[in-house]
Structures are given as structure tokens and as C-alpha cells.
Length: 123
Image (cartoon, rainbow, N blue to C red):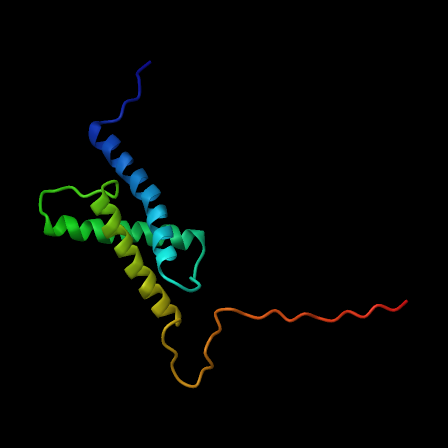
């Protein structure tokens, strides 16, 4: 029986994808922690925003430093990935209507008050 072995390129690609997903989650959480206020989206949105931040941040630095590989494992990669995720979160909030309100629409409240209902018990 033959042993199943991946090529070096396939192993490197799988490693990169898993690292970018893992650090994308961390970077998305960093960006949400830095930006004040309530954030739209849940865990999946945070993951996708972090992965997008890693792609944008590390891709931009790799573009300007041609021939050098930037990964989110390095301090520079983590910094630019967090900045990229922060930019994506700002655009996400902008598109969701958290910064600007058009027309005569009442402003959204970020913190909703709970109404307590009085309960009457008859003996």
C-alpha cells in the first residue's frame, strides 16, 4: 500500500491557510477591542473581518516590500493585519449606518433600556 504524502508546496499552502485563519480570528478580536462601541456581527463576522484584515494588511506590506514574505506571525504582520481589520470594521460600521444617518430617521440607540414590568399577585 502506498503512503499518502503531500508535496512541499501543498504543505506550505495548508500551513499558511491555517495560520491566516487562526491569526485572523485574533486580529479581528483585537480590532473589535480597539474600536469603542457596540459592533455589528457575531463570531463569523469577526473571523471574516480578521482574515480580511490579514489579507489586506499583509498584502499591502508585501506589495511595497517586493520579494519579502510578510506573515501575521511577525510583529509587523500582526500590526498591519490589526490595522487592516480595523479599517474593515470602520467600513462595516459605516455601511451598517452607525456613523451617519440620512433623512429624518431617528438615531439608533446603542444601549437599550429594559422596561421592567410590574407584576400584580392576587392572594
